[in-house]
Every structure is written in structure tokens, then in C-alpha cells.
Image (cartoon, rainbow, N blue to C red):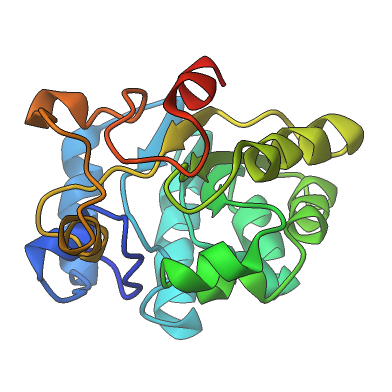
Length: 225
């Protein structure tokens, strides 16, 4: 598929304004033909489940057919939180050779912030419970966290790390990054309207580890954190 059927305000996809679209099965066949034999296939798809369960199952049937023919042994990809709401999705993925999935967790306990950035779907279920489902189903759960010092305190962001360290079944995140006001995104327009982007910020600073928004806590403390 292309783009996404969610509109998280910090996501660069929201700046393009393009609708979520799903390519045909013929297109997927051609892509699989072109890539040839691989040990592991990674599906570079922002929303594998976005077109519903029926389409997802049809695609997994094709994936399994190619796997039985010996084209690859395992596969991995991107999904959203909604994938893990139905444990049948986990079973189907694992049965067809899925070994890991990457999810934008963003926050473990701040439902208010998730609502603010239009990612309400991540507040519907406990993230820890969804991770348990994935690991119990035989699929490695990979994820990232978003830190937004403009609307969250250091104490709140530090609590995210405490949850991870205090919960043995939760793996370490692949990365933590600050919410980036990419030009054109709702987050960008909000930060501009409220004069919250730091002076002399350049495009090259929007790389997730350079502080470019006015934080709640003192700048020195946030930079150190």
C-alpha cells in the first residue's frame, strides 16, 4: 500500500496530503518476481492491515505460496497497533513465516498526548499486553518511542523508560526520537501558530535528536536528557 489511513499529526505522511491506496495483487506478484530469492523478505508497507482482514488474508496466502516454493524462509514488516487487536492476525502471520513486526508505540502510558497527536488507536489497549500477545505468538515486537518536550515534561518522558526497564517482557526500543515538526504536517502548523519552534531552526535540524521546539522544562535540562 501507499500512505496511511491514519493521520498522526507528527507523521511526515500527513504533509503530503495523499490518500491511502492499496496496490493490486498483480503488482505484489511483480514485486515478488523482481526481488528473487531471499532468506528474509521485509515488506516496506506503512499499513499492511489497512485495507481490512480480507485483503490481508489474500496477501498472506500469496506470501505462503511463494514461501512453500522456496523463494524465502521468513518475512518481516510494518504494522500499526490495530494489527494486534485480533490475535488471529498474529497466528496467520506467524504461520506464514513472519519473524518480526515493527510498530510505532510512541508512548506506553500517556493517552492524553496520544489523543493530542491524533493517535487515539494506540490508547485503546495496553501496549504491554499487545507486546505479550506478539511475543507469545512467536513474533518479535520491534518499536519506537516519540518524545515531545514541547508538550511533555522530562518526568513524563523518563517514566516511559522506567516502564520498559521495570517490565521484563518488554524489549528495548529500536529508537527514541523527538516529535519533529516536519513542514506541512499538522504538528508543524500548530508549532508555527503558537511560536513554539526555536529561532534559527534549519531543515537539517529536523533529524529527531536536535531540539528544535520550545520545551516545557529548561532547555539545558532537556538537552541533557
